[in-house]
Length: 406
Image 1 (tube, one colour):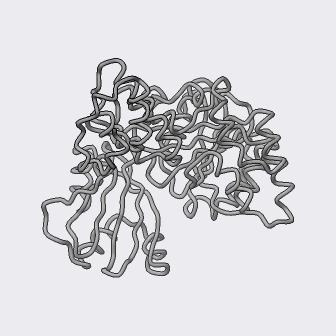
Image 2 (cartoon, rainbow, N blue to C red; image 1 turned 45 degrees about the horizontal axis):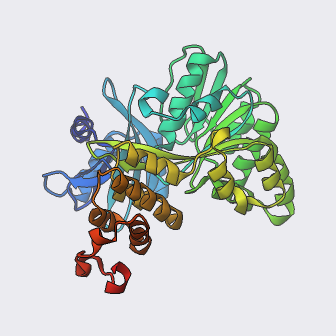
């Protein structure tokens, strides 16, 4: 058993997601989004390097020594696989390992909206999953491929750095290719995929212009392409993709993207009230009107299209966050902290709080305390004929002037 295995076993037992091993620090795990130190002494540079080299292949060692960092996958049979990055910082060598379970979570396990699940039935086009690092993009795409594996009979080619979730051949056949180990680069892997009779192509990340251009071309030539982009909202994703290209090519890319992009799923992971985390989603479905906005350089209108596009399967992030609050899954503070459009979220929160007041589940004073836009909350309470209930509010704790409440 490798020395690092004992830390990874502990990570799995506690239900954590990441292990951090750093020079002059005790091992650290990420549990429900928060880092927690193990009750162990700090590790020396020699100890970290020993842990690191024990699980590296010869190729990984050469790359680490030449470049000072390397990516690879480490597996403990019968336990899990771990996406690993070995690197060097000011303190010395370090490792970060992310848990990748053998058992792929299904769309039902994740509670994915049906609008997202239905996307894998598309014969061609691009589906993008976006969000910050660690928000579960890979898990969502793995669940979608697992669903495709059960309802389709196709060839799926995955190109990743490194390979994360490994799918068994059920109805589909999978060709998993790792950048560096099985193929030189994402670009080369995509070019080769055209000759491998694929139906579905998973590109781990559209990280550069050439990869993005080839992914769009793959969708144009009749393939379903799934990939990730590091953006925070569905609407900003379109601009990010187009802005990768030089100005003289952007017009052409707008036209190509408008005809190939089928959906953008932006997600964020929220801490549950109880143990664990749950995802909130923003969904942009590209129908003819959205395609026209992309072609005509009017992507600034996409947020309002998402707001009004519920019948097409769209949903705004704030809407999804408030659904989790109303369902009792997450706290109001957690929802607000993950909102990007704070001004619009203020209105949603106050509407929700006012409904709680009117139903008798929340006292008006408590509604004001919980609000993030208190003058508006107070106005709603006064318009609801409940002014007396907040007359004796302790103003000093809320940082409100007396004139606002009276």
